[in-house]
Length: 204
Image (cartoon, one colour):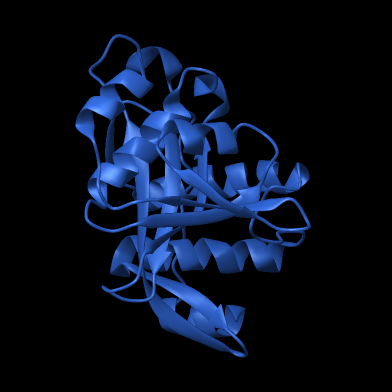
């Protein structure tokens, strides 16, 4: 898969994102969801590595080749709006969006990656995180609520283990737990309709 991605993307280089200036974001307006840039990819890769250490990452990143494959897949999302989804022994193009929660021009508070096969399919929430310095302040639910507004009119689905803070953030953002398999992995879905009054009360 890495060789295929390199042929598609060429020898693009990435620059590490600057360390977030936490103080610069204090006191600013309510955070909003924006398209992430290439400079933000390093933050998601770091979060995915942290999640893998806790057994919560959707990707296996135990070597640099796998990490590089994910990096180039995320670059493809940022630049072309396409997620490279493996199906059997092939790699197909799905719609993809990498979104970041920010305080204006301040640092990234959290990010999420969503993808879907086509316009008729539900969006799949593949991964989301809140930066460590912003955890415990309700930003997980805000990030997910903002995604529901951004993707209005389409259901949003995800699967993840029932450990850590992610399930509580999903439920606070209006996701319903649909099923839990024998391995403790739960399926969640947020319906297409959104109630703005419910949003204001759930994050108060």
